[in-house]
Amino acid sequence: MLQQTQVQTVIPYFERFCAAFPTLSALAAADEQQVLQLWEGLGYYRRGRQLHAAARVLVETNGGAIPRSRPALEKLPGIGRYTAAAILSLAFDVREAILEANTIRLFARLAALPLETTTAQAQKQLWAISEGVLPRKEVGLFNQALMELGSLICTPQSPQCSACPVADLCLANRKSVQHKIPVVKRRPPVEKIREAAVVICRRKKILLRQCGPKERWSGLWDFPRMQIHPSRKWPAEEQIGEAVRDLTGYSVCLGARFKRMTHAVTRYQITLDCYEAKLASTRRKSGSQKSLRWVSLEELKDMPLSVTGRRIAQQMVEDSRADT
Ligand code: SF4
Image (tube, rainbow, N blue to C red):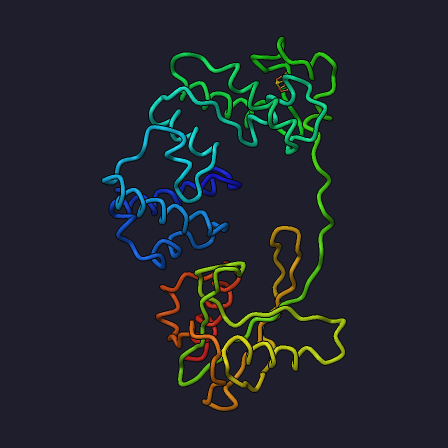
């Protein structure tokens, strides 16, 4: 949960997750939809699916026990060198070095590393430093202290060198180059895109589709959603109608736009227009997508949705209250 996500954001999710799945076997026995529902809003849903898959593998092949070696852990879904080393050192005090955002910054500054930190050469040097400084005992405590030092003192924008317990060892501090290190890769420019989501209603039920394995929210449910290409010659309404047919097999009569929201996903800044629609015909194009479900507003509450999908659902609940 903590990968790419701040502790304060994670805490309530972690507590709900552990309350629902107090043991590995409870997690392994859960339905993926249940797992995704508890992950809803945390983002990077792949982590939740992989954690669930890893629990299943451990219960099926290892009697539900967590392996105590890095090679065995790294065979599990979603577990790479850092996660395996973090589990081993923090949970079992095994002598394993870790490298994550905070310690990468810390080590890069301590060594005044003049390289962009994701390059193979820099990674090799950073792993060598993290292995070289490992104590013989209390490795878990030491690794946690390093991460805390990186996150609280050696911060990205304003490192507090005067309060730093390792300032005397720090080459970047000595050379006064701490603000130039770590050398970061220039980010690709933000790209603005337009998308539409369509709320299709029939007899007080709403059509949802489950996102496929290669889609942004794989495994989650969503309103039929598509990108709009302003450069194309035909109008947005026609593009939406065609995309709905491709995604669901249904032809629809598009109604009014009832909501516009903007949100960011990786380097994309997305303007999302939400439309109402009714079926033009109840016949579906054959061979079209199977992962569709008609759900009531009540059922919508229990479906794992993306953040923007949930905001659309909330709007519908509010509108239905206003109507009654
Ligand atoms: S002295 Fe400054 S730059 Fe060096 S590790 Fe400490 S906080 Fe970071």
